[in-house]
Length: 159
Image 1 (cartoon, rainbow, N blue to C red):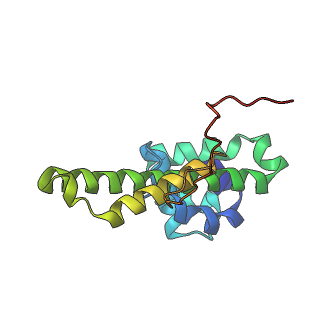
Image 2 (cartoon, rainbow, N blue to C red; image 1 turned 180 degrees about the vertical axis):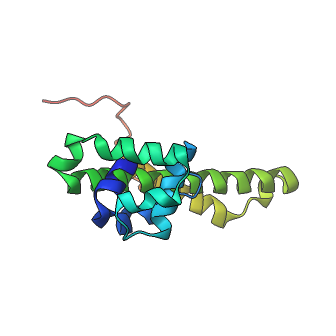
């Protein structure tokens, strides 16, 4: 991701806002992302003066290494990183809502759980599930009563 941001400045406005402040976990990479946030239009080489030795070494290594995945199809790489970052944002939001629900239940019991929090958790979970190709269950309660043949006992005969 950081290599893509350094080598393709045009993708920065789309991807930088999706990266949390505490990511990436490696300090030199986090420093590079912070510098890119401060100067999103700057050439990667011009950031060297803003960084410490470890981050400068990382920038140099990332610029010298060519990744064919990015040079072949930058749009596909951006789309992939965007999906990943959006999914991670939703997962963080899920954990935050689950923590609120847990704290509320600890303090007030299960009956004190706010319905809005449960619905928000379901919506975030649904969105995450759908990003990996699943179809989430609906919370809408429908009366889907299908009359059954009273003689049938769960076995269908095909004649």
